[in-house]
Length: 157
Image (tube, rainbow, N blue to C red):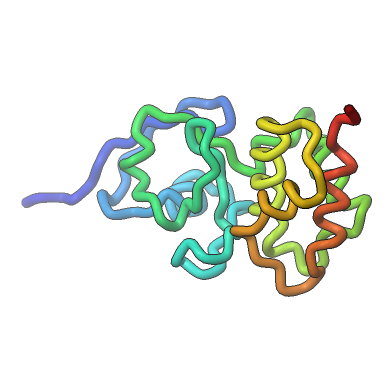
């Protein structure tokens, strides 16, 4: 009898893990169900809201649109991977300090999009920050406080 299972090996937040998973499982469900990394959220399941954003091999992706098997032998960074020694990452603190989260559902995806931007452009303009989070929807805050949080972590020229 065929099992439709796949052995997946990935590096998540710096740690290599290997799990047997259903072949058709999304990367989002793999992170949440198999690794118990529940910071990554499912908002729409269609790649429209950005709540499930993670960094896969240096690219910002919607994890709901990617099969977990497509991440074989690759590196994934989730929101849980930002915190160090039990403390929040400075970008996470900037979001909290600037009131850039209300209900918090979109916040992990927003922070991952902001990290992706700041890793590539440490001194973005407000327009560049807004463009970087364009794939992430927030229904609570508007985007002003989010852009301010991102800019507060930008290096001054």
